[in-house]
Length: 283
Figure 1 (cartoon, helix red, strand yellow):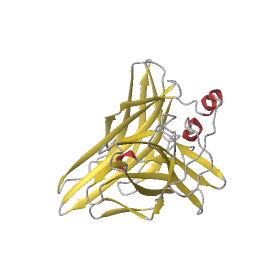
Figure 2 (cartoon, one colour; figure 1 turned 45 degrees about the horizontal axis):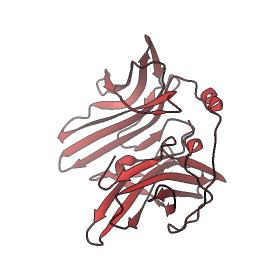
Figure 3 (tube, helix red, strand yellow; figure 1 turned 90 degrees about the vertical axis):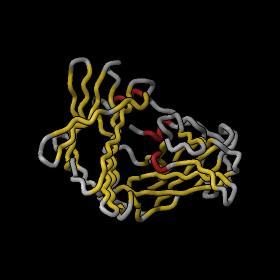
């Protein structure tokens, strides 16, 4: 799955100034080549873990994104997660969106539990289960199962995924003190080399003009009170973030993200749909 190959918006080499605007070019892809490289019917795309503790209150959150081939309309996709007592729970995933002209789908789930002096429910290991047409397919990391501790942060399971927007920490918000709207974008990238650039290409007028927002590397990221994840984490994933002040009349922004490293460009443009964020919309 190469998100950056599905770029539908037109882009050329970008400068580091958010005030610069660019002319358009085009990108295309051979869908047969993509299908040949991604023939498994189920694949974990990414996972994310959060833990925090404050004055005795603890919170645990896990997010999962799974890609499946659209083999039939009726299907069940879920995470089988090991509990600390050794048993296994099923966490159902919900349909998120179709990709690759309907040939594949994304399914997602978020699991959260919290309370005062509560015990941790889940251990580290999990697998993906996909049932369709009377057949069950498993995504289990080539038989090794996936494993993430509650303190590791972000994980890209898809080996071709190198950049991804975290929509949970992306927003367009109004700040009355400055009478501005602020576009805040958070992105995760695979640490392919020390020298890299991560930025947001955005438009306020349906791509008649484009702006560029350079993002800044975050060495530490707070996932809650008294808990931070170091970047890059144990999986080699870094967190980048930035914001740009906009006129308060701007109520929606459309954008995509570019990651430049080792002479290559990698894109996350939401599978060709681009991302859209509205005022006070946290996706």
